[in-house]
Image (tube, rainbow, N blue to C red):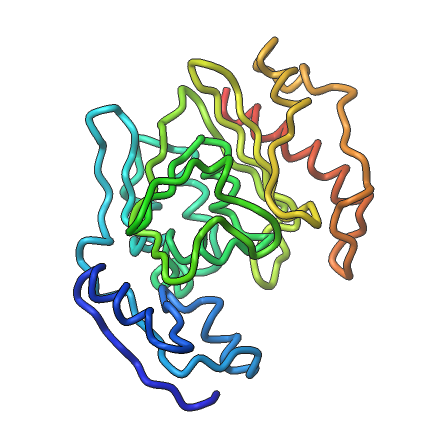
Amino acid sequence: MYAFDLERPATVADAVTALGADEAQALGGGQTLIPTLKQRLASPSVLVSLSGIAEMTGICTRDDGSLAIGGGTTHAAVAVGADVFPGLAGLAAGIGDPAVRNRGTVGGSLANNDPSACYPAGALASGATIVTNAREIPADDYFQGLFTTALEEGEVVTEVRFPVPEASAYMKFEQPASRFALVGVFVAKHADGVRVAVTGASENGVFRWSEAEAALNDSFTADALNGLSLPAEGMINDLHGSDAYRAHITAVMTKRAVTAAC
């Protein structure tokens, strides 16, 4: 790795100030950034650690019934602390291995927006709101492509607010070495309709499968998805799975998620 300075702010305000320095980079759990630095694919002069900011950690239920999770909260904490939202807790419990779950954070995952990460599907399917130091961003507006989000320079994900659905489940067909999603599908049944979000499959990143949502709004059963499929065009095609394979697995995982949610 290249040499760099490390800042450890104690407040969000101090973190934002530190990120204003030239070539400064936020450091959450480091599960993506540290390997990137080791490979010399990035060379920030300053790393601003967010792990010591108490106001960015914790889980609580808001007055409106939504689940508020601090951006610095680890996957392991979500796995045991989001019991009112079983689909999300299950998603967190299946990320990586214990070392990853105890270091990686919700905010870091959403800020990075890896095309095979799990949290983007959970946030998009639940209709979450991503809260930063400057504003609140609906999930439908937040995700903008591979590793691309609505975040502006120096903006920090401080909290994520998840509406708790009536029923939910996440099913992931994982790459066995990394446990990233070759395809991951999060299904959430809300009072005003069903949302289905897919990660790991598309060249454009996480997306909602509108045809599946329409079918499940008519009948929230796996059988309602019979005959539905996604085109292979636009799906990721790599050594782990072809585009046609990912399109097929998406339909399979969606059925499994609905069955698990029922």
